[in-house]
Image (tube, rainbow, N blue to C red; front, top):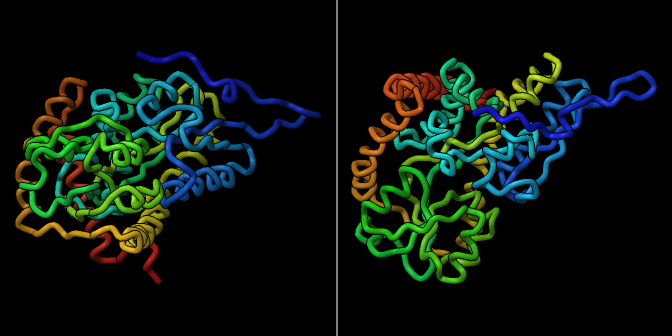
Length: 348
């Protein structure tokens, strides 16, 4: 159902002395102003302003000031924020199309995943119509990079170690932890510090740069590198009515800035992940590399969740099997780009 309430900042342009002033838009972000993703979001905002020739003014509200992560979709669709970050795992049915980027499809490369996801979300007409029905427009995508897991008072060295642990996990990865006997605790990643500190959870699914950005090295004893897949369904969406109310060149500025996000975050996240591991080591956290044989067990068990996603996509009126084929083709396309040309930030 479409929402019809727009944010006040997106409803009008203010004229002064005959000249239109910059269109001021509020950007909602549940996370802190730290880490690679925060830097990439700020880059997006700066780039959009520059490309608009000063017709835009983007005001980022960090740390959940406008909405929490689990309220982002309604907040943007209803105009609490004009645009902002939506994390699909908190809205598994509404954002089922975007959730394809969270599936364990043997796609461990952050840049390849972002580029494939971006082209799918930007170019597939059925996905665009599905988003429009929720009063949303897609602008650009992020990724968490590889999914890992941090624990307090315990360590995961094999999949057998998962049984009985209280785990914060999401998506197909969290479902797979449950298959191996974990007791799942629903909790946003931004609350995991307190959950680990108080013993509400034993372990939290996460990713290296975010663990450091949220200072979780202070409350974990071990960090297991799963190298299993990534959560890539998080990105910037805009209230469709607010977007439709902008002049075409301003719309194009936002869309073009979004296209550049994978290149920017890809470079940042690679460096930040390396630094985060060292931060954890310096804090006394044990870094564990899950053996390949154990990783294969995770991959085999998680494969069932692709079929479940196809079914959910069908319930939303989408051809999930066709989307999955298209997505895999895009992953292959961008992996070929990396193999032939390298990453954008490493090219001469």
